[in-house]
Image (cartoon, rainbow, N blue to C red; front, side, top):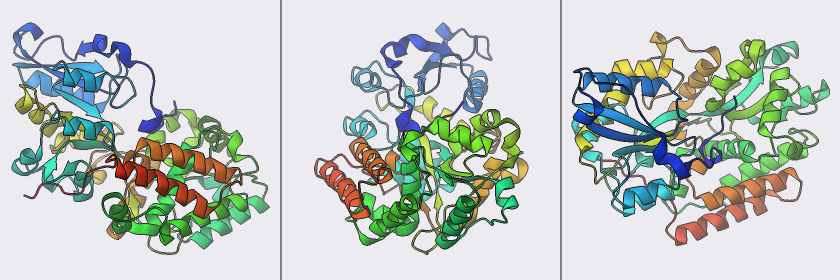
Length: 446
């Protein structure tokens, strides 16, 4: 199964979302039935009957707390489904939910007073020692912490090791080295050195986002998101020029718009496409889809297109929120603390293939080689700064749509770099003027 990032994971499940509730245990450790226990309602983004490393830990917590029973409502793959805000506003929503952390609905929830401030627990329970400041900033404003980010994801250039070895190619650490690899691959019959999945569009926006992140650095991205920076400033345009150059050189193949993400990954698994840029979310499904080729797959950090430092990238796939009007805030916080801030739980989450926020016990966990390479690549450049892996997760939905169409126009050879950035900045400025950009950047001070 091929997974996609949050803004593409939308299906029409939510009309009956309240009917999908399941209790994680039949009874509590003390023998009390759900009717005799305090019921803690959690809306969680998974399919009915599905389980993962987090749901297994929830069951452990539930069994250890005899007076509380956790009831999970499966929201399907969509984060922040349309049913959530009306339910919370009507006083019928969950005690806690797992949702998106970008602008839009989360900000609407916060402004409506529906989200509990977790700032006091961030300090009192020592969460600040685990949760990096850059991630806390994405879910904070004015010293209040609105969510606990989880399922950290990074992006990188996935490649076929045997092809690189056969052609004597090294992992590139500069942009010129990447272009030289592209040229060598083309000379040896690989018509599509980098699979772009232009038919879907969103995969190649992640490549462009990584190029922008490297070019601007963490300070530049932060200034654009939360300060007076703009997406049409020189460093972004210069990076976009390198992106347009990749297209003009044929790096994405003769027909990049003809291939979907699924088709591109299938070509990558057969070796017809030797490189493709995507996120760590693909790795669990990759083990099944690539079959024997999985051991031949590696991943490296994208070089900086303007020859500066390479920076790490990471984004939370989701955030854990607590209902401000719930009578079970204390129980909700205790569950979050157990899941994401105890060593045993963090190790169990990592072993399940999910990535908790903060320092990781990599030496004590047996990870698959591809995930280990991705984490190692990000770790090696972390001191240079960290930028969001998915800019669509921290920018308005309207801007993502403009980015999507603009990137596809580049792949159709009908848009240049300055036009690309001007279109995106125009969308950003409109959203900013309307107050629809992400309010973040000031986590609690402990």
